[in-house]
Amino acid sequence: MKLLSFRDGNREDWGAVVGDGVVSLSARTGCATLADFIGSEGWARREALVAGLQAERPLAGLAFLPVIPRPEKIVCAVRNYMDHHQEVLAAGMQRELSEFPPIFLRVWRSQTPHEGPIVRPRVSESLDWEGELAVIIGRGGRDIPAAQAYEHVAGYSIYNDGSVREWQFHAKQIASGKNFESTGGFGPWMVTADEIEPGRALKLQTRLNGEVLQSSHTGHMIFPIPALIAYASTIFTLVPGDVIVTGTPAGVGWSRKPPRFMKAGDVCEVEIEGIGVLRNPIVDQ
Image 1 (cartoon, rainbow, N blue to C red):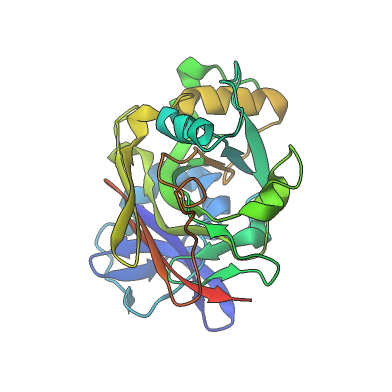
Image 2 (cartoon, rainbow, N blue to C red; image 1 turned 90 degrees about the horizontal axis):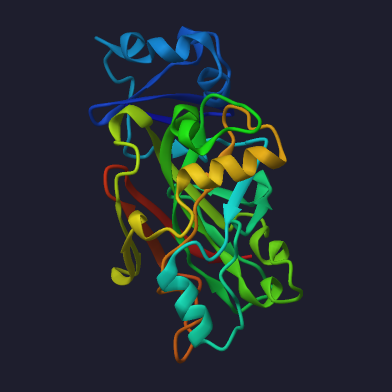
């Protein structure tokens, strides 16, 4: 089942993909947002809720919103693919493998939806792509054991963790380069967890103007999804609608020789097997 958030005129709405269209579920469930629905008793009856419904509007031309427009937390993993860790070393950065998952937080205003622009800020010439799998938390909790982590997953989506590299390297903490407004593509929808077998290695590909720049699969993660959930939930209580962005494989722009970055007029696509394609045009601030 695919669930998504979108704009209906001046109003934010959410619903389900039915065929080539969308059906609104906010009024039918009494839940104003998708995050509210994920945390509601109605979540277990989601398939029955949609059964027999006809699409109310086409996907084509839909004004998408980030899948979860305002999550309480966006937890992002750093250097979580071995091939990416190796390209970081090859680029001259001294980084040892960590015993624990390196993470940082994004703010919700840094997100942009499917087909929405990723904005290169005026202070940078080094806006980079990072195609990533996003995990949406369904059942919240604190101190979640890794063995039970998949029980807390509502579904999966796609993230482009757009990175403003100069600002990322201002200090050892990289969050400044990861939180510029409208740099994190998130969408187009979430695929519910029952559609994807826990631990399945999903092919991931990032393309810039049709050229393949990243090609890997999620089985190459250093810290798999259960480890990320267990670690994050040790720090803070996870709640329905929280997003865990699981890291990117090799092929980012700054490690290339010469470096290569996104610029106005480009189109960046991230495709993940079993989920779909996240597409974002690049514009200047």
